[in-house]
Length: 331
Length: 290
Image (cartoon, rainbow over all chains, first blue to last red):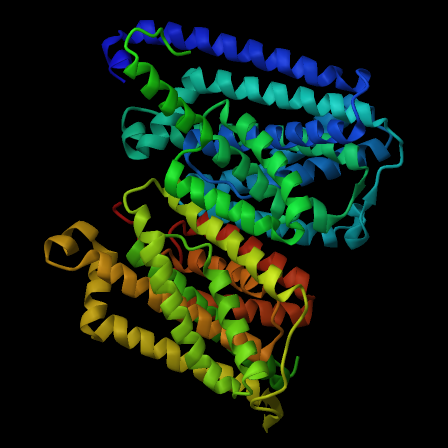
């Protein structure tokens, strides 16, 4: 604590940059190791686990980019990912190449997110949260009704795409989303966002155009969610609206960030690993109690840890190191 | 469309609007006084529905007794939840408070699914049959629900507007610091508002079980509409919430007949986004100073 206060701002900034560089390098190395797994003879069960960690991490990081930085809670990231999934599968069925299909998915999701961006983000406070909640319902209703989405019976990807392609793409998206978050948080945009989170009126008073920044960040966040959904659409290859647009995925997106630590780059990593691990254990031990256990875990974290595993562990480490006074700086 | 048909749709809309109004009243009360967006409100509705269902099927009591019992059970439950969980969150950031009620909602959804399974449950006890008023057919169950809604809603408004307790609640909704400075017991007033609102939700759930089917997610769908109403009416505005409840229900009632259920809901949501764009603070809401 006193350490950061004593340091001049420039010094703490460069130290922050160094720890960021180490973090990003670490994420790339771990990502590369994860990507190599299909060729190292790992069981397909283990591969699926890594895939889901990457899937939830990428989605949690997309959520973190908007909600972690601004404090505006989104309940629509599952629906945004679903739009990406539908757009990608429809494009691939229309014989577009893979790369173009992913671009279409991201653009479609950003366009859809503007419904919320243009209306609710002009307001402060909880209006945004409600608008995202209704968006989830609206998209599900529309997908069931629109002529080209296959309705309630779902949508099938005609091509057979090897699973390892979706696996590699998802790990790539997760790594890229984590790095994007870490860089954004340190950037001018990220610092302005934290100012908005702290006190939006004060931020506006010193000349921060909060509405514009919020819309930009939400579009970026939605674009990432769309990419995540597109890759997952290719992975599952059959889209049922009730599954793709179930509110569960939106819950996972924010639960992952909340468990690990909202607004920190490392938070969703810890959150995704804990969530996937816990889900596997719960499925064996108490199959029906999945929601109850996740809910109690979230409640416990909010009430007792306050801001997630990573910040809590950080506090624990810094308390220990300050007790043994001669220890070096913490990264 | 004949006049009789229009009247029939109007009556259907009124019954729905009454229930929605009760739900929205509770939401507005909690948001106005406790400053909490209660995502767990739907699970309190489900609690009331299952309470009544169990009373009727296990103890062979009339569903009419279920309404006050559900209100009391809900009120007690709300009291405990506020004392044990919600009151601990005073002074925490909005994000944390939101996530707290949301986590409660997940726990509730999971518990109901675990205990009762996904079955659709209903019962045939209680008022049956219907009356015919000049071609407009109203089921006795629907009529009972509407009357109960009016009684509960009017009672709540009376308490909030006239009683001494209500004075504290209104003072808190207007300005927390000033209310505290004037000697209003803030924690006690918050607890009263919270348990009253949860009691209303449970009573609404009791009526939902009377006129429809009970599932673990029944409250979840009602509360989604409740949020539409609260946003449309202006956060924390009780008059706006009641007005919006009936407006939404009439749009749904007529829309369902002219198009179908799904399109009626799509239109409702699109109207809501348009309303946010045109009147950002709701129909009767005021721009808050906080």
